[in-house]
Length: 236
Image 1 (cartoon, rainbow, N blue to C red):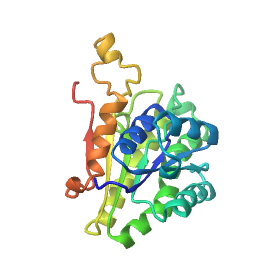
Image 2 (image 1 turned 135 degrees about the vertical axis):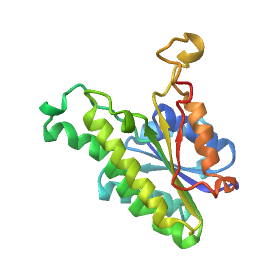
Image 3 (image 1 turned 120 degrees about the vertical axis):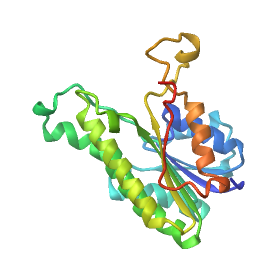
């Protein structure tokens, strides 16, 4: 990927968001660090040694249209445009059988995963298409396909997010914009697969491994990859 592009990382203060932000910062890109807590975003910028003119706190609850507009406006006011959207907003809720679910069980997951994606795509993708270049990559989950028991709201919301993005990929095909997802079983934040290997964690993926894949999908060299679902659980 060319240096000095503007990368919006939604969910920047999570373990995966930090790894993604660190990798893009290291290659010379400008960062819009998306989140809801300015202090945590400032701490992240210091941790990955971002100069003041290389980043902006993109603060807003992107599960709402107004929040997404505020966050993306912070980025465009500072840098003029957004070239790359990396959606790694996390959040899991489970434990309730489908037959016992209420609206209150389902809606937070839809807001966290589906609606954040809708609002950010609305705010960012038209500008990418207009300029003739852009990259959208989101963290997906194998649970969207395997549908584990007592994980209905999460799996359904992530499945909806993935289908939405793969549909978007078709809509922007040929425009210079690509949209892809990376499917993860579990994020191995503590590198347990290396320090304490077991049959349970053999298919886990570290934040750094995921970030490297995301970076490639955002590169010029990955222009031919659009609408793909890259599975990062290949050890199973």
